[in-house]
Image (cartoon, rainbow, N blue to C red; front, side, top):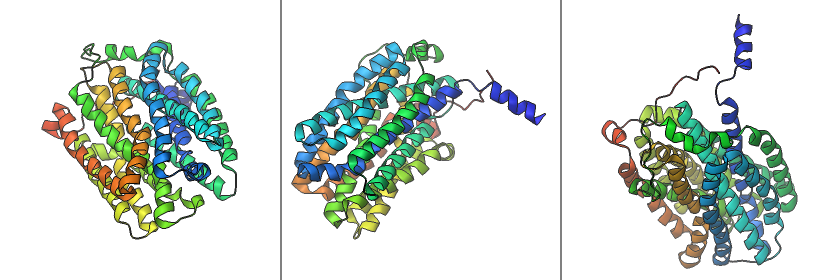
Length: 415
C-alpha cells in the first residue's frame, strides 16, 4: 500500500513541481554567479592599481548596466515568457565571469562590469517574476525559500572561489570552473521554466481583484522599492567591500578576505530557510521590524569591531538580519492590487538591484572622502529607517492585525 502511494506521487507530481525546482535553480545561479565575483574584487583592484574612488567608479558601470537591463527584462519576460529570457541571460553570464577575472585594463573591466550588472539585474527581475507567478498560483509563501536558495548559491560561490584561490588557482581558471557549473545548472533549469504560455499577465485572472492598469509607481511601491534598495545596498557593500575592508583595516591577506562575505552569506541562508517559520510566529510586519534592527546591529558591530574576528561576527549578524527583508518585500509588491504584478515587481527590482550594483560604487566614492567605517555607519542608519518605511507600506490587514498578509497556505492537489 505504501509503495503504491509513493509510486502514485512519483508518477503524478504536484502542479508546478518542476517549475518550482527550475525557479530554485535559477535563484541558485543568481547567487552563485554574482557572489563568485566577490573574492576576485581585491585581485582586480590590485591588478588595476586603483584607489577606492576609482574602483567605485568602475563598479558604477555595473549599476548602469543593471538599470538599463532590468526594465527591458521585465517587459521581455512578460511578452515572451521567462524561459527565453533566462536562457539568454544565463548564457551571457557564463562568458562575463571569465572576462571579469581576466580584464587587463580599465576599459575592458568597465565593459565587463557593465555586462555583468546587466546580466545580474535582468536575471534578478526575471526569476523574481517567475517566483511571484508560481507563488500566486499556488497560494503558498515561497519567496523566502527561493531567496534562501539564492543565498545558498551565493555562499557556494564565494566559498568555492575563495577555496580555489586558496589552493593557488588563477582567478581566470576559477571563473571558468564557475561558468562550467552555471552551464550544467542552466541545462536543467531553463527547459522547465515558465514559457510564453504562462506569461505573467495571467496573474490578473488569478487575482480576486483585477489590478488597475497603471504605469506609474504608487507611493507604496516606491516605499517598498526604497526598503529593498537599502537592504540590497547593505548586501552589495558586504559582497564588494567586506574583503577590501578586511584588507585595508586589518591587513588580512587577499586569499582570506572572502571570509567576511562567507559569514554574511552563511547566516543569510539560515535566516531565509527559516523565514517561513519566523513569519508564521511573528507576522510579516514584525519580522521586517526585527530584521531591520538586527541588520543595523550587525553593521554597527562591523564598524566598531576592534579585531577582524569580530568583523566576521558583525557580518554574520548583518546577514541574519537582512535575510527576510527583501523576500517579504517582493511578496508584498506581488500582492498589491494597484499595479499589475509584473509592473510592480519590475519597479521594485529596479530599486533593489540598483542598491546592490550602484550602491557599492557610492560606497567607494564615500570611502575616499570620509572612510569606509563612516560610510557603513550611514548605511546602518538607512537600515534603521526600514522600520518606519515598513509601517508606511504595510497592507491594512497587517497594520490592524499585525499578522502575516501572505495568502493562506494551500495544500497542493495532485495533477
